[in-house]
Length: 427
Ligand SMILES: *Cc1c(COP(=O)(O)O)cnc(C)c1O
Image (cartoon, rainbow, N blue to C red):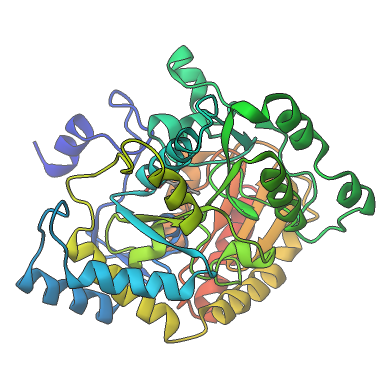
């Protein structure tokens, strides 16, 4: 059996069926914005490989950091041991995050970072004398990962809930944040607050440990951008009802939305923050959950006073070293300016399709461009067309979107937007 045949028969891809494999491209090498395929062709990675490769693939500084660390110490357990890459990375994260977010927990992936955040919140509430506060609340339209608790916080309709029946924990959902990012935030809303959230908190607040939300950008749950004032209202309500606020910045962190972190649009701070994806510049799976001293102190009152989580590969030195180098790389230049430059170009070049009858919405924020169609896109056709154009896009449902690496040059952005316009107008 050749490789392609073996792969189709034996290897699962994300959200795929073994008996009906979707077409896949065989990538041999990735450097900068380019994916080099086995057939000799190449494609611009307009997805940053799902938000990860923010600085392009395999930046020299990150590859070097990985090699140096591999020579020294690829891994040691983190129970009872520590090492320079973990300490140095935590110092860097604490320095770039808003004041007060400074208690760092390392884990293996974004979903696990969300699990850890939720565990922190529930343990903190129980330890602080609120044993009934074990439920979670969130908005519809979110995406927080594929592990059980994280999945239970994803949109209940567009997420995966229906496939798992009663095995999915029931959480409290409120409507999506109602006002778009660049729309006016009506005075009425500002005054009367977030009525549905307030009603939920006043009825069930004493059983809710935390509210979990992606600040400003709802990613894989629908690629929507909402008004930062929502977060300010939410912060005030959480404070009033003693509910911890968890921000999932796994997709939005490190400049993607045009600010360093999406929470900077609202200038507020959560109690617990999740980072992942671009944390390692897309080099490897790794994540961090960062809490305030207050959350750590709440957990500390409990018995045991320990946070009960500890992955085998916690603080893996290779991942910490790469992430440390990635934070350095991020700080070496104003990448948010690149995000804004890319956003300006996306807005200008995608603009012409906004009026197309098959397009229901066009939106751009930072270096994220989204065309929402009225009907689902023909995936197989799009897959083949993108390969011919040399642009890697991976729409889902009615959403055709790009979040290219910050290093993508203007002529490469034009190639992405031309491909998107052609898809939106119908292949
Ligand atoms: C990707 C993502 C996750 C899950 O991260 P994994 O590394 O895939 O487990 C969680 N939250 C958000 C907002 C994400 O974009």
